[in-house]
Length: 289
Image (cartoon, rainbow, N blue to C red):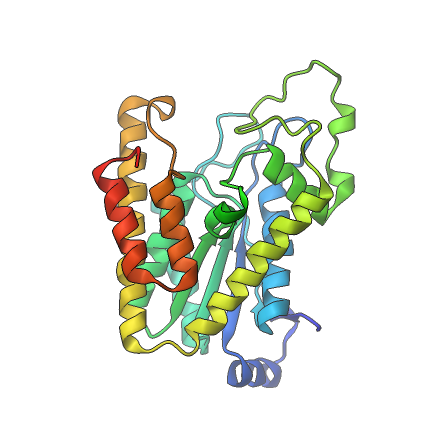
């Protein structure tokens, strides 16, 4: 199936696509240090590749990847933009895509630091509250906790994903033995990352995202309301975690992907929004849960 790339469509073609399948996939990335073995644009490169697979599976329109995002690691060659700059841009983008006639927008972010994750989800919820669009804001790990990937930075997961996208852009062999991979958050990818694992992650993310996007086309008002409430509850626990990190340091705060939050993500995928909301309420009460 060919990909319907937004920037290459003519007016009659986009009108036809919106009539047939009014779904848009918009990939989000950034420019950021990914240690010595990966390129600076990994987040956008992976997001573009995963976004293409989502669009293929859902027969959706694919928007160009954006490289502007919130936050970044404290290493060189890293864009680090404030939420006060990026979040209004995300809202404007979602709002205008909705005004074009897209009923469902999948915002897939390959850059998923907590500040970016909050901004993408908060912008999506804000636009949903004042439009008829259904917006699915997701990061890599939103659909992969069930197969053992909770997100990392330049670790096994991101290295494997980059391997699946473009093997020439993974240069583990060029890092001398014993050299520290500065900036890796998660497991050291040496001897553990693989193209096969990257392909499995891409297939899981794209198939699940496409499934949910197509389901959104047919959900009623009650389901939409329940989804928004569950999304809001998820944002609250992310904001609480971010605040605790600011006060006490990241290393002293439980990770996002605790059992309750993983269960929240799985319930969101299934469309069990009442359970999804309940799981985040548990984590809000106890970040260790």
